[in-house]
Length: 75
Image 1 (cartoon, rainbow, N blue to C red):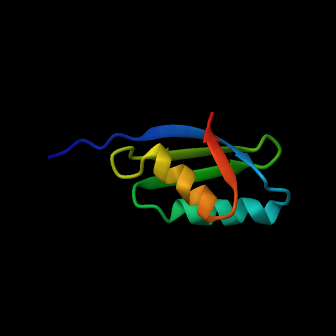
Image 2 (tube, rainbow, N blue to C red):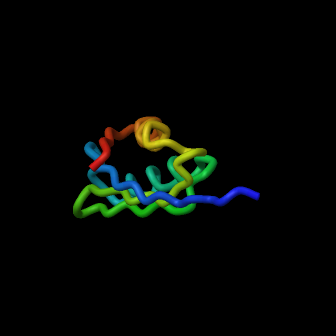
């Protein structure tokens, strides 16, 4: 039996300018295996992600944001 650990990671995003960008990022990051929830704060450009760090690393999260067309860095 394994114990699952959920990690909360906050990323700072750049390059999005409209609410539809929020949905695009949430959809792309939410597709990753191991991601439980994604919340994009449009006004502060923060992305809060709850995930299993063993299945979805911070690098995976940053790559998913990049795949959506935006730049993100760990906060």
